[in-house]
Length: 253
View (cartoon, rainbow, N blue to C red):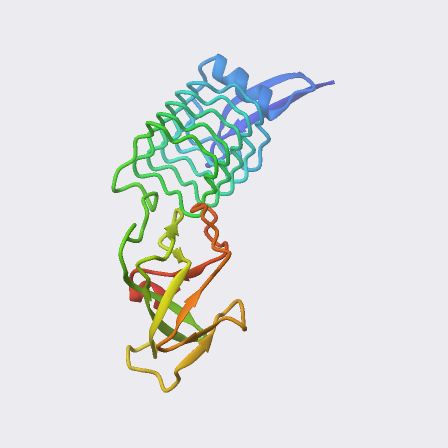
């Protein structure tokens, strides 16, 4: 039995349709690509496109939330402003892909090939880039949160929010430190300088426990240390002392 599948835009109008035996969204997309169909703004949420050959396809402004692009070949594809939140691109080949302005929040790109990709302005917050090949990738200071957020050497001040208070930390000179794809940082060792109220005044307490581990205590004047610090920067929520460089961000967190 033949199955007809329509690819619609985010506004509901049909961009392309394809009919064949045992048809899938992947087959339809590949046929659309081969025919040079105009797929800008396509709504493909949750689609399974694993292994699809979409090399050079124009998917600008496409809605790809939750899409599975594992091992897909997207070399040279145009994904400008594409919405790929929570997308799975494990093993995908995105060499030369234009990702300017793409929303990749929480995307899973572990082991993806982004060699030479244009990431300028892409939002990579929360994206899992472990093992991803970023060689020769084009990104700038405007690429959201890709560069390390904290100093790579020396001591500096960090801020964290605990149980409604703000803890002022001195990140030790010999501490390991990292950040992933957001403003949140982690370190292995810090000195507790002060516990403050949200308004900036000194709190009437001298110690406070972590929000996530009640046995981990921040005590003014003492140094806290995490022995099993996760050195992989892309594991944002892994082991370590979490903090922000900016006090106001810590307060709003």
